[in-house]
Amino acid sequence: MSAAPGELKRLTLTLIASIIVLDAIMIGGYYALHVGMRTERTQQTYVAVWVVLTLAVVTTLMKRIRSARRRR
Image (cartoon, rainbow, N blue to C red; front, side):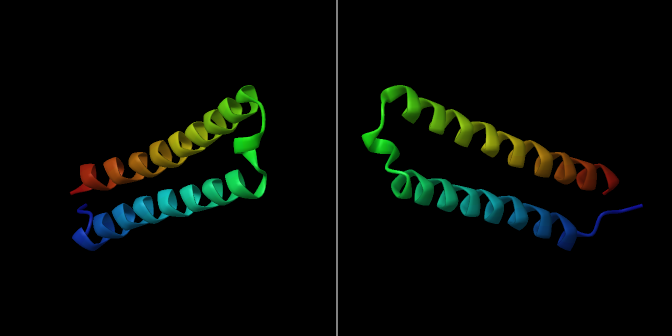
């Protein structure tokens, strides 16, 4: 069973779009919540949450991409 090249392209574009959307939300939240004016600990926690969310999105979608590539 072979994965169509279109499927890989779609998954890759989904990965890129997901990261762009996540970053836009987190950057918007950073300014909306005035994180820059809060304590250093709060800023670090915000960035840590951002990194963990990014990692979750990337690992999930990369797993799908790898699975599709194996089927090729």
